[in-house]
Length: 563
Picture 1 (cartoon, rainbow, N blue to C red):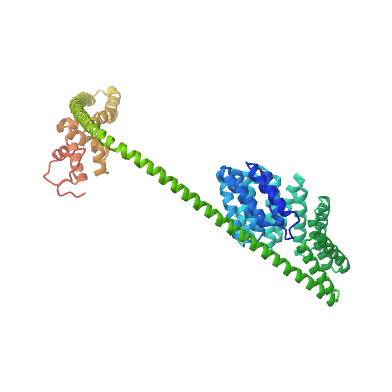
Picture 2 (cartoon, rainbow, N blue to C red):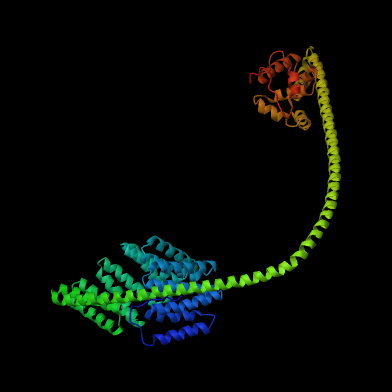
């Protein structure tokens, strides 16, 4: 990614020639390559409005060619150019547009770099929370990819925010993380800035020895990369350290060195800082005249810088306005041409359609008549087919009902047969039980024990539920949901009550019921009485009749019900 940094210096000779050559390259060397964006950096430092015009041409070309990658790079480049000119709101707008493109194209690397740049602009626009959000998004991506270079930049950005928030511990933590990642990739330029940031943190905390250590490391790396501008700034910082620790002559020497280098390089910002530091040193040396002279020179220089900046910003904003106005005029002309072309095409189409319309109407009427006739025939066929299907379905339903009725009758017969078998079995057991009891009354003592065991087995047989389980299964098939509705209505009913109700539902006589339940008729009367109480049946109302009225679809409450 090309990072546009606009130095506030005078335009270099030959700028117009560079601009003409670069624009010609853009026009005749399409598609635009990333190298073209790199070549705009020098131009942006010397003349931002010209740089904007160049990048704008590239942006228009990339839009026409649907080159989303270059379009995003150009939008990012314009955003950074505006940021360095102090137009933060407009810079944010362009960076957000670039970010949207990188999101849509899933260009994760460019998106992460753009988040770092956007976070920086948010920070300087005093939107610190949004800045931190952008840095954290970039940090998550670089951690996932284990990108040490990206991590170094992002950690340094986060550390800078904590430094400005007066949180030195957090700032130091993140700058150390940035230092470790930068050392891993041996990025000397990044290391230089991180060492300088660490020195600034310790300087703010008045830990001047540590600050001097990191500034010295930063200066050594800047000398290694021949970064003249960076050296001037670090020398100024070292001069501050000497001044703050009372070593005024050493500090004054470094500040003068920074002043001389700034004058040679034409770096007005660094020159102003050096003059201001010299004034501070002379004030501490009790030389007010010299301090005042250097301070005045610094103030005059600051005024000149701000005047140049204002002129440059006004020129850039005027260029933005002119370009946008021309773009708007071009868009209006293109729109008008499109409208005129559309009108011509529409008129031609209307003339052609007018000639064909009469024939089409006649043809459609004839076709409509034929379609209506065919539709009527089709509807008749559909009606006939549906009628036949309904007849078939009706027959199927009748057959199904007859089948279900037959199955129900069969189940009823099975239930009756099963019940009769139980009655017959219990009758035999009852007779056997009576005979055995008669034998027990004899005086033959040696047979009583065995006979008593047989009686107990018979009694045990009366209480077995196997036959009742089979009975319940068949009964549920003949009378679906009978027991479910009954227990929902009367939850206190016991298993014996349910058996009695089922036998009453089948219209079995009291004697047979007593035999099936293995109880006497007196016990059966007691059971019937208890059952009437549980269901709240009024006196005089038949229990059997009430049970017969019960159905799976409805359960009528008994008259004068107590429940």
